[in-house]
Amino acid sequence: MEVITSVQNPRVKQWAKLHTRKEREKTGLFLIEGPHLVEEAYKSGAAFEAILLEEGIEWPSWLPASALALYVTRPVLEKLSETKTPQTMAAVIRMQETTPTKLPRDGFWLLLDRVQDPGNVGTLIRTADAAGLSGIIIGDGSADLYNGKTVRSTMGSLFHLPVWQENLFAFVTRIREQEADARVIGTSLQESKLYTDISYTGAVLLVIGNEGSGMSEEMLALADQNVIIPLYGQAESLNAAIAGSVVIYEAVRQRRL
Image (cartoon, rainbow, N blue to C red; front, top):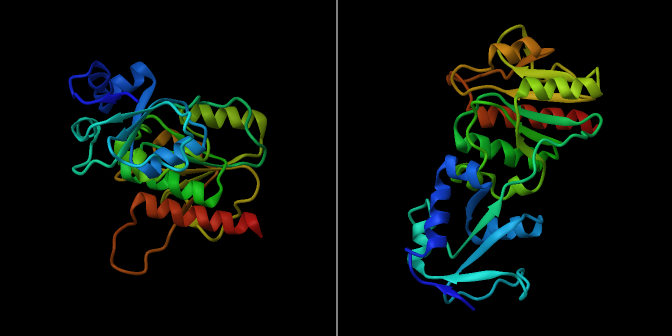
């Protein structure tokens, strides 16, 4: 099997450029790191351009012997890694086909409105996966879905359910053309009710706003109802990912009754 030993290898130099959003969008490719993420991507049917294994490690039991994989040296993995301690495996993957045209009825969708922290975006994707949501739409001004920190924060959930980038106004318009009674639930102090005091049945679009400024005026205008989470201690607010997770699980609790 071929072993790539030099960080000056043309393929390695090209893959290293995928740390920039410009190059990811240009090529339609992104990097992932670590055995867990690579295994989750493989089992979910992701489109691989390359699977990279550190020279000397045992061939993974979940990876068929016929799989196209390359051995690389530790310096090559260090060149491709965004973490201080690179793991023993990495991969180059083609971005998912996005913006599905057919949406399930009575779906429960999570909309991220300018959520800028990659860790928050990744955590919300992971929560949505755990809660069984229909999908997540990453709105304009949010962290890049394929940013390395975003991908790592999803812990593989990125590959388990539909996640894509789209203008939120366009998505709401599109889903309301299919389901006129689809409701947009915002997370805002404006004209809000306690998150436990409303119904989340039917087609629901839950919007999580920016960490500092909350929902945009455009999305506030589309919201049918805003909800708040009460704070009983001295903290001024909840982290966006935590707040979103609390509301998601209340909604799922109701929808499963």
